[in-house]
Amino acid sequence: MENFNLVQLDFGFDCEPLQKQKKTVKSNKKQTDDFVFNFMDCLTSPIIVFKSAWQDTIPKDILKNIKLSRLLCSMQQEEMASLTETLAYIMPRTYEAPMPTEWVNIYTWLGLKYATQFQNSDQLNAMTEIAPSELSEYEMRLLNNLRRWIYDKRRKALKDKLKIAEKSETKILYKNQKQLFEK
Image 1 (cartoon, rainbow, N blue to C red):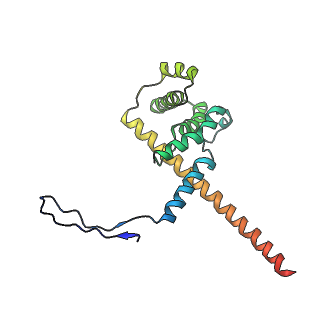
Image 2 (cartoon, helix red, strand yellow):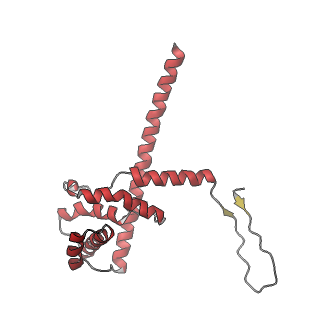
Image 3 (cartoon, one colour):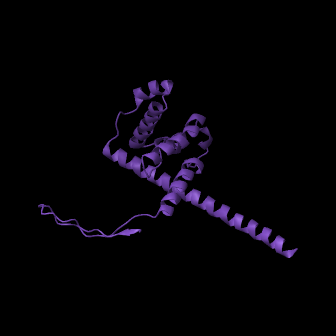
């Protein structure tokens, strides 16, 4: 019962007919697998940061709040990195060299959103003075492109990690079975 055919009945109302198309519904196993993978992604995926000598300078409170932010994004069904995760990615880059104005606006706006979300009053007072209250359309596009890129890299890293774990598990299982049958 995975594929449903669309049938339109005529009750005499004046309305345009629905387009005839086949709609497929994901099987329960696929939905369960997706849920499990998404949950694993939120909790165990590596944190992607800008490759820099400064990547160790990201504050611990930002790093510990990334998992919660990922869960919130997952609940909202956003297929993008969380704002907190994006802030952590950009932070080491800010120490490397001056950034273009639009990226400075994005970075300070992310800091403001982080301070607002996690109610850090010291950061909030500082960020309200320097951060823009809204981003331009262009800056939002840049930010969303970065968020999607981080999300894709994070999920790819988790899939690679799971493949490696599966291969090593298979080798161990094979060795154990071989030892059982050789005796």
